[in-house]
Length: 165
Image (cartoon, rainbow, N blue to C red; front, side, top):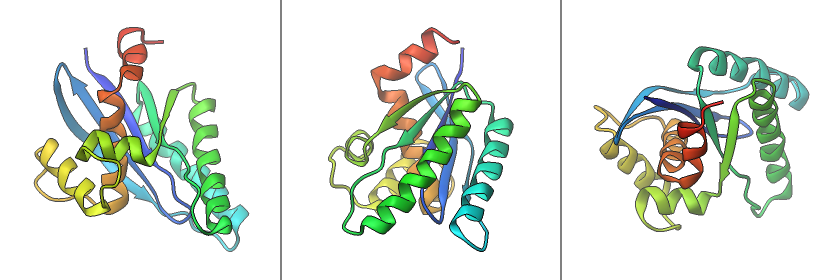
């Protein structure tokens, strides 16, 4: 039985998403993209993110989701904006009754590249290689693919794959 994982890389200006499907020990990328919210102010952009991400979830019909957790950066304002976007993503997934796991940036980098200090380019290269993609995906989509693959490699994914709700 195939498991459909929606990997999500939340961002204040761009949110990457990827539907990674596991069939036995083989993984394939079914779809991916980037949501770039539009609006005149932060509230309007968050509302647009909510509407557009809900469309992604409804189209993808994942069994579960994996979302990159926020990290504390140097700029508190950008950290707050990222947390707001992540909150919108989690609310959409919760309202859609999709089991969701979170992974830190270091966990994702370690699972995909082998160490927690990998650069964005290394992530993009590895997901391209691991899934035998014809071309490298956009940066935010590559990060979302990495989140989905991390979940599939994690013990947490067995809860959804084996005990589907």
